Image (cartoon, rainbow, N blue to C red; front, top):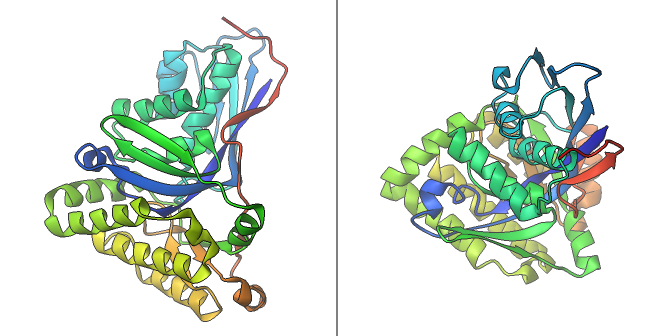
Length: 330
């Protein structure tokens, strides 16, 4: 048996500019952090059977990988000629909630197959292969940040361009980083949705409208000029996060709705100084930033209002194998 895990992420600045249709013409920068919430994938050889058994929100049992309905699993298992294998998928958060779960699944499954086949796949290899599968082969209208975030883990600045991707870890003093993470909370809102449909609209709008392009350029500028020292200044960070959210809404009207806007206003009323919906939009998780002086009130009021807030904990490791007792295959 092999078990891998791949982290989900929260994106702070530059999201939306990581679409190839954008960064192939204008360089992109994104600042994001992986969190201690994961996609877990278990692989176990079938006993004297060449079928593939895939268990996720559905159950599929097929004679060969090409018969799988799950597009990502089909592409990966077919490429590596995997058969006679039982694969199970579990997740701390459901898919379609703006945390990069589909790309984390891709990275996690690649990590599992590389472990099974004894392949030497670096974090860069995992991220690039995941992008190749999702974006180039399956034509998903998504960006590059989720695959790189899940593969690398940690707090990073990602720079995307035609020349390739540069990953720069952001290092903070322990006390600063702990205080910063202590300010981050997630609030689930709405139901899971398809990021692809929303991003398809953004892709078309942003490449054809000077107005939407202007907002995307401004979002990129925030990420490009963001200084790690800003993590030490709660007011400055909150103002940048609020500005980024306003620009995101202006760049694509499908990003928000009255339910999301109302939830953010509730967060502000109990002490948050910034809030933004993660991912493509419409529903998922709102990321709130709460300064140190307001946390006690925020905690007590959120409990009283039964908001179901989740404290953000960081992940530093990225995709990894957490258990393996299986004989390697060549």
